[in-house]
Image 1 (tube, helix red, strand yellow):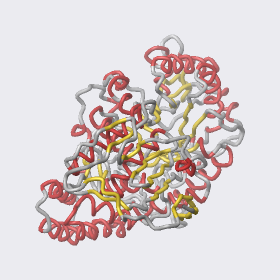
Image 2 (cartoon, rainbow, N blue to C red):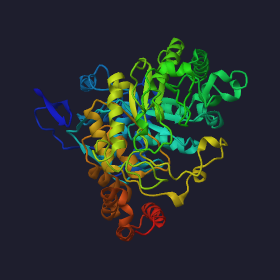
Image 3 (cartoon, one colour):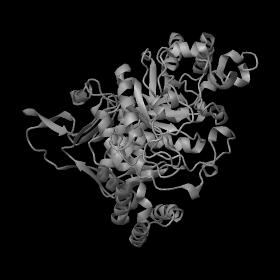
Image 4 (cartoon, rainbow, N blue to C red):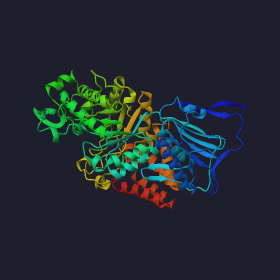
Length: 586
């Protein structure tokens, strides 16, 4: 039988998929027929853990959907669904030259193949298959949408090849809360993120929650990468341990030694930090990247040695849009020199581990005298974007970062572009604030008790709507145009629309925000989707002026409640009504 190559085109990627010249004799693969199946799930006996887990997840969800439990085997017999990359198969050839985590879903000769060019890519293939072709929804952590079906069919001509447009796609576990961490790791894998960023902020929560034995296995079995840290200056050089005996390890501020920051010009400080980091990595070999972030206060060491290390004094771009009493000078040169010293020493003992710094406060400016070492990752925090609604709600993502009307946004973008001139794009990501932090009662890292729960952190009276979907979609598309490859976001109180769009746009940045809002609503609200789509799109379009739309949106919630009897959907609608109850009448 003669065959030809059919080119299946996706935006920004052309995919080669083998297709026979003749039409298939059947139009569909019937995986389940009236509650019965002849299929098995095949996975190699030597498959890595994420591929074995992918097979288990496929069986679990097929059972939940159709009440049929498919056997998992390592032999091909009868009709089967193969899970995993086959290096000897020409069918998986298109994956070889694509970016890491790309995956292929292919129907052939009544069999189905789910394969990724990385072990987690295979897991993504399973979750994407369940989502796109079986109508599952991964809408929120712990809130899967799983339909019930008597029969399951997929096109016999199915050939779907996907690749991410961002190599670094991160979810920051902050605040760091045990039970929520586990749900969020599950959600991250289902939404095809590849980094889990545990933000401890110099607390002891990693040990308090026994994270190496509880959280790490969940990350490992999904093949995700682990980033440890947050604001960690004090993790690596603790004031409790060193300040009394070695005050010179810490910053000089207003003429006095102050433990809030480190003395970055003291070479012994870099040595101590590296020694402690290497000891931590010896005990936690699963960690792929470790943070060395400044403490979360806008001060820096003022010693003559650090000023000399910095070089020419220049005002920091962080001053733009802020009414500061004193000028704030850039300190990114001294910081990168300090980080490079640490990174070199870490590389000697842990050559595969990345060391991350954060461009934040007076470090937001791109350095002018030094480039980050090859094992240094730079996270850029475009904090305090404009416009904000009030003093509490200080971060505004209502408009894209390239919008010419807002000087803070323009300034943040200028610095991103300057950073990209001095750092490999694979070693740079933006630290976004897509889920808002204004609802916090207190910072989690100030209370390290394991019993600290989400309800202790979130003040419901301060919850508001931050529907940044229009700007997020435009930002991410623009980032691809300037060569960016990395993104991450905090989670806080989980602004659901923003968090749903973010991971999908890192794979398909050409998609419109409206199409993704519609997709979310169809999965989250079922029969009540129509008024809920209108509700969320009103919020998207009204941006920071959304309180003016309160009465209109409440009418739409009324309509939605009349269209469903599903208790889960009704609860989701009621949660939105509760948020509206705290929004003042316009």
